[in-house]
Image (cartoon, rainbow, N blue to C red; front, side, top):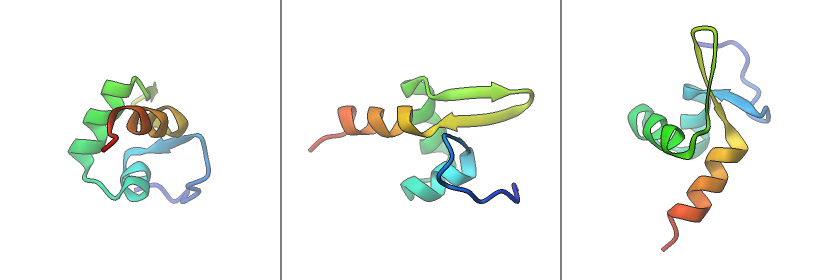
Length: 62
């Protein structure tokens, strides 16, 4: 697990994004891929926070 716990950054780890969304790893990863918010940096999987949060707002309204 990462020692950098800054949740204000633009690119977050999967675990950090799960913490923000209060969702599991599989659901978060699936939604991030659907939103095209996934960035691969080397072998590291990062999620662009603003893209995923905008996607959720647009696609998961009641």
